[in-house]
Image 1 (cartoon, rainbow, N blue to C red):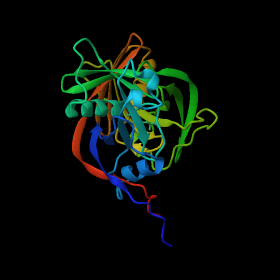
Image 2: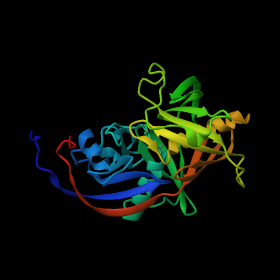
Image 3: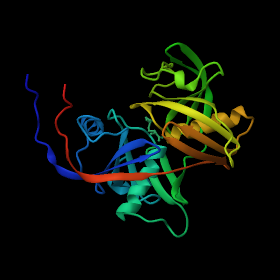
Image 4: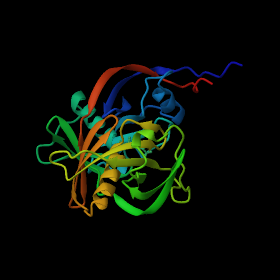
Length: 295
Ligand SMILES: N[C@H](CCC[C@H](N)C(=O)O)C(=O)O
């Protein structure tokens, strides 16, 4: 059976970048003119038939996008974030750092002389600043919303519902459950009544002490709309807040080791500054897929 294949849109510029191995297709589209659809995003993020990525960042002026027009005065640029499955996420911590790295490298923006660079997201405007060779984002203090349970093959694990602008379920592992042993291939189970919009599910365990950090943890994550990723910035914020609570603290510095690298969280005064690397690895042009994914 032949599948209807509409003609592809002429090639458009793209970049590929990542933050601690959480990787993104970046589409510059200042005027919001590209006909992005969930199917096109999924095709671009497909690791065999497309460029490949955990998500897609459209680089669009806030004034040119209905989801960010209200932020135009506060933040000229909107990170239009899409998960690899074509769904939207309200925010993306690694994505914001990668987005800003692209703005800087492409000359679309520079560091303001008088303070942080504001970036609009669907979860609101975040402040971004340079941190040596890295980039730091204030994701806002994660909000703990009560207990919940996650199930993965062979384990039922208690956790905490955490709002970072997007939804998280953070499960500290009991000592007898090694982080490396968790099977995160299937979507972890959780109560859909608690997470009507789905959830990013994180699992954490203690790590060896890190100089300069009050708490050090290791984590893995199953991301909503993606699957297991090497890193999740908003998830690391959620994990850091739960790890501090477990140490009887609300503020402090938390070193979070993820499979893709380390993120350093500083929670204080209602902020959660997440600091880490952001790299642009390639640029090019790509036809916007108008055809559905291959069967
Ligand atoms: N999958 C997430 C969005 C991306 C989060 C993650 N990549 C990050 O760095 O925060 C969600 O649907 O809420």
